[in-house]
Length: 448
Ligand SMILES: O=C(O)CCC(=O)C(=O)O
Ligand SMILES: [Fe+2]
Image 1 (tube, rainbow, N blue to C red):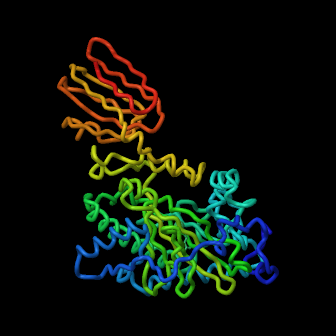
Image 2: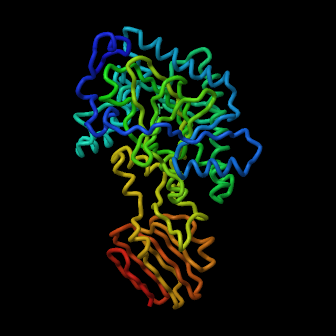
Image 3: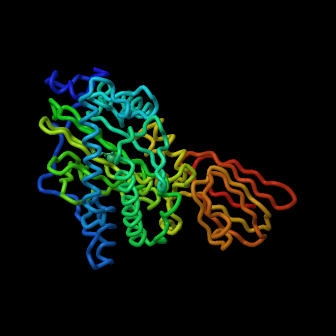
């Protein structure tokens, strides 16, 4: 099975191998499908700017998903991009040799295309977590082949040459242009969200959006669609995703209020969804929704996903203007590199670890300083809020350990720590140090 070519499997088999069968609670055949419900469709070409902002914001808060029409990306370019991916996959899948370009792991140059290709459950940690927690039977793999493109724009540089698509005559121009257009669209949508949230419209320009990835999925027909999935249930771990799906095939589903809502493909629209990073940056005001892809026994389906990813160094944390003493950060801060690494190792379990639990926020450590200390160091900090004006300039970066130079004035700050952390406060009054180790959350520490 492992090296089965895309072209041959469907002709030879009439059932799904057991390793691709989802556990009963995850099978599409056993889940509740919402009837007549749709994710919002937003006209980006409308004249009422305030209306567009409020629709984009509301859809991102309520569903974490929406579709956009009149998005400004020309139809010919979109069609040409979809066709390139389709034609290449069909051509490659009919060859008798391995399709090296269809790697999904991104780790092995020897990777070949299988009929049943595994991606989300194939990442080492994720798969391990799901197996350990009996979330999938055996491996519970996804039914698809996919290809990955890591691109820096502009110019278009394949980040990872072994996995770069075999150069076709028109591939760089068409797909390159497509990624540039999608970048513009992504920034436009992010700007609308910024305006809705009250952030600087350029908040996401630069590092937050400089690391895009284009991923094309190919879902072959499946002999038993009710038992398995094309893409397992997941949330996108990036900032924002813009998906081009093939028209005429209902396959993508979003989980909302206990039901699966089908994201019906509409000609000339893109599907947009909020990723976990944006949920963190918005301090939980926007939601990253669970979604999945079901298969069907008749038609193959293609989709092309453009993921907005930050650079490795970008700090992912609740945006300063969206946090306050009354609305404290609900997620901790981490660089994108750390976050991504943890995600690959721990999988979906990791999302839970990102939350600062309500108890810890409510009982944050309040540190008041009323004597002339000249400096202070605090470790394991998640976020800082304070009334002293120095905080605005001095402590904007949310490292897990901070050092503050004080100016001998009365000072009061609140630090938020993760649940059950051990943290260490050192205050220096110029004559000697005063150390305090505090275990747990909710301690109130007053100096002196
Ligand atoms: O193929 C699709 O419709 C969605 C794929 C997806 O969810 C993803 O790439 O994250
Ligand atoms: Fe996704």
